Length: 265
Image (cartoon, rainbow, N blue to C red; front, side):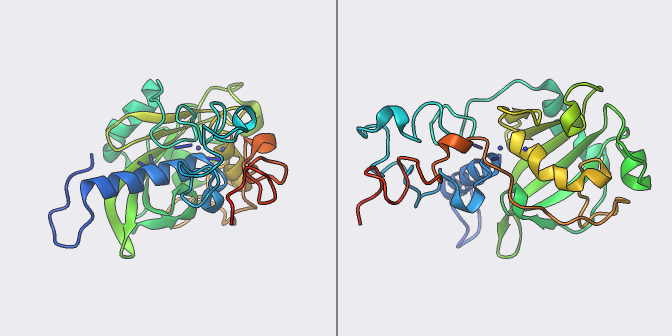
């Protein structure tokens, strides 16, 4: 796999002086979701300073309309999987994992700051089917193996408000052979699945698989900062944006700096 649009991915009112209000926390979570769904991350087309931003001349009412990177099929569009607060999707397995993972094997005592999961602090859990591979280094993982990353917003250099639950589920052979048959999903703090799919081209979770390909030696699992028996691997180059040709960061895009649709300086 956001390229997985988009949190990331229930938020209560802060009770201490100086803490962020629920509205602020919610907006931060939505931003994390958008960043996670879109592989542009720092250059996320949904970011406030991007030409796709709501107050930008490239917005929906722009004369470039049809080719506008904010149009319906673009990652900045409200109904697009890359957008924050996208429509929930059905994924019973991911929902079940989000409810049950607390009873699974936790493989890191200390939180790990994960830039690829929206710069959140994460804890990793393995279900019973994932334990043999994860703890003994016996790869590949068996079908039915599920790994969950429980995320928390980074606040003052430590875990803060609860964020999304990221799910990796090993499906039956043939589900997505090119990407080791892994299925990816993101469940928000309220238990709603915001993103779900394989690593196949066109899938909103394509960028998840693209990122995890760097860890093929461990059957697509990194395990950094955990007690899992994995070979150390480094993160490869940022995965290609699944929006590619229509990428609002692309030179020929209507949002490009030299384009008529670009913000006027």
